[in-house]
Length: 244
DNA sequence: ATGTCACATCTAATGTGA
Image (cartoon, rainbow, N blue to C red; front, top):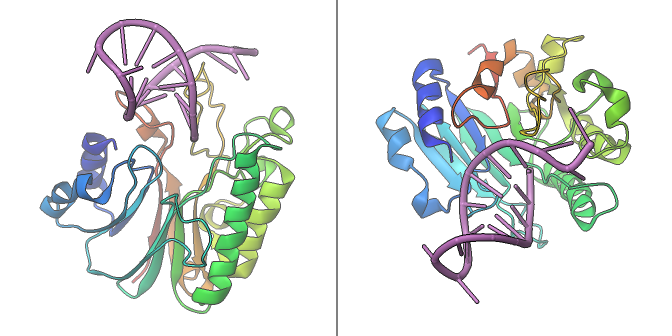
């Protein structure tokens, strides 16, 4: 986990809630004290080396659940839900999927289908809820720097986009797209080559909100500056402001 | 355009996943 950079970002931005993905440490190794010292509570569903998701919040965190609890494979720590200040919040790390046709791709599509079934069974679109994280899906061509070059590729293929739409159709709004109907801000740029320098990015990190929460949306921005500098992630943080 | 990065492992170069 990029602890120093996250700490500096939290000190400056002071979000009420921060959802993290790919923390890549188990619960015992998560830097809980770093967040506590900043005035945050944390809920962690960690995993060593791979995956791992967490939520930090300035209010109390209650009703924490991890995984889908559907009897399926929960070996990957990719999903944690909790309640903060009356909002049900999820930190979501969707599998990358490697490439269409691979086992990992099938796992990704099934994982997204499981998330939809979990929402059907365990959540209420009429209540305030947000799903935040690395979705590893660019929902439409506006979210891709070069749609022709990416057509059919991982992160952009039609089955992935359809699985994404099934999540949205459950009852959420992509709040960046709601705030910026024609915006072309990206949240991820490949480490390799000159992709960031040339802004050859994709928008794959999303905040989805149910109607009662989306109605309170003020702004949604992607902090491109965070992709720069020493020890930067290949992702940039997405932030949304909601009225009380 | 198969490139960069971080981390793991039979601590040095290689495999893995992104």
